[in-house]
Length: 74
Image (cartoon, rainbow, N blue to C red):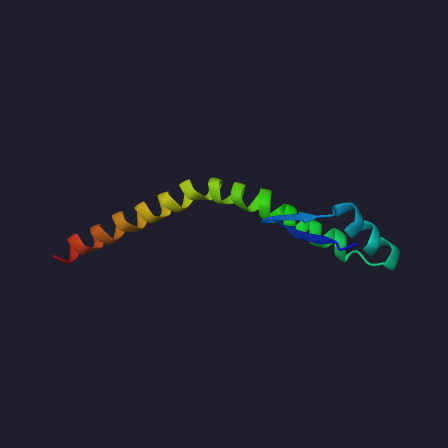
């Protein structure tokens, strides 16, 4: 059985088979790969959502300081 199926525009991963297959071989790449998938789907969007206000304030402060410097040069 294939670990990944592509059927009618639906991608399905067989998570149990991925973990068991790599566990029998004695490596942890399957668990690391699943962790990367989890990180990409949950943690990164949450970090982007929380980082947006911080980035917005940094940009606003930079624009304010640049306008202040421009006014001082006049």
